[in-house]
Image (cartoon, helix red, strand yellow):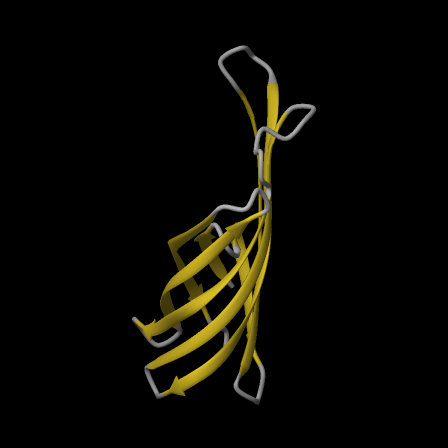
Length: 130
């Protein structure tokens, strides 16, 4: 359980599960409701997921490749994002900070549904309940 921030796999509270194989799955969900300068109630919503395939896995680190997908929404009655759907892929590294606390950094080529492709970073922090 933790927090993920990235355009390819979403922004919000995230859950990551490592399977007995080299695969892991991560899901992120974030929702914030706020009033803007005009006192209009707006909603920010983000959902994303990624599948991670371990390339190298050690006791305190692991390096992986991943594809990811996300959807972003920001508005009151219509989405302010012109390209809310994003998908991409890249590589990442996860590092053990303390016994159950891990941080991860990723670099991904992010494809927006308007045709834009941008290399962007992502980061996450997770606490594992062993």
